[in-house]
Length: 112
Length: 113
Image 1 (cartoon, each protein chain N blue to C red):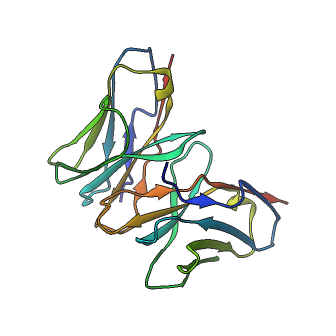
Image 2: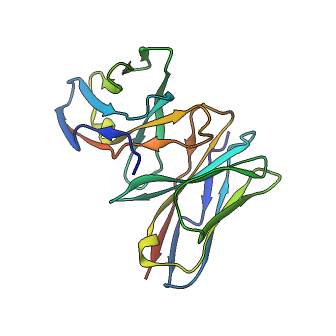
Image 3: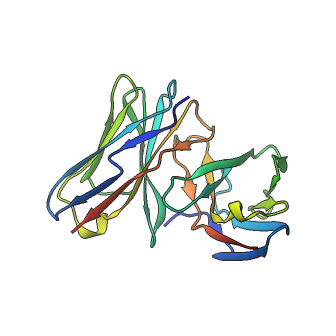
């Protein structure tokens, strides 16, 4: 069974640009969550999607958005990139509520 | 901000010894806890979980202990191996806080050969 797949693995963008990251969950998993990981803040929850609906959102500005498609694949978008958005962005999927979340390898975003 | 705290940033142990990694959580409403292992360049990997109706759970070479009275979680690794070297995170989830895991800052485990 394939794991959580995130693309691309690495990305370099310029301040002010926007970026879209993609996540394919484990087959059969309908819940997809996104996290930002930085050395200073650790792992911070961005948002969670289930059956194409955002069910929960973390404390991030509106520049961070996401969506989920009918096949459970998810994308997150960051607009007007800032240097501080440089981070590892992790996607996790889970089959049911309150079960373990399985993480992908992450997308390393560098904003210059 | 909200967080699950860890007591030590780095733990260094000798190969073959037992390791204990601690975690303090703040939300008494949390009812599900997970330990993750993260190796360099990889995403967090699930190790073991425990629900709030239990105080101990064992896996292969790992044991998680939950003390709800003092809101403390620990991960015990038996016969620590070099491959156990990584950053370990505890995470909590509370009913109603859908899909959101709150992570601690992480403890780096270094295994000396």
